[in-house]
Length: 121
Image (cartoon, rainbow, N blue to C red; front, top):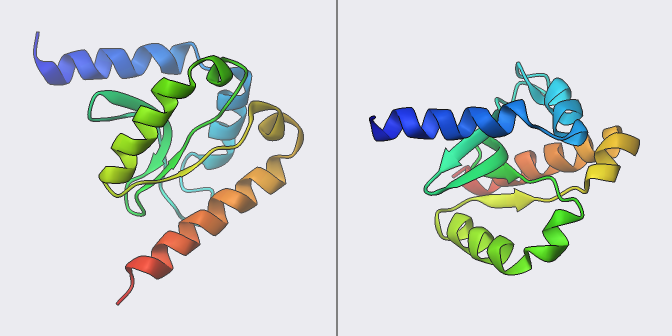
């Protein structure tokens, strides 16, 4: 099987087993609903899959839940890898997505706009 096919299969599995917070946030981010920014869900970057990414702005959105408290070394290595490739990361908590969606979207939009200002000449 081709490497691309394996990556597609690995990306689809998390999409099918997404958390409620991921499903809820994706409903508000998909189809350029956040002021025209295109975000992708469960996108591969190197050997990692990120929850959401805007490739035009090099912004990754990673939802954090209780499982991330147990995997801090993995998350740190992943953040370093993404940072070395020019990605900024926004990390809202699952409960924020479920209870404070407007604030989460605003923080993502601020990050997208901040990255856009940094890249303009």
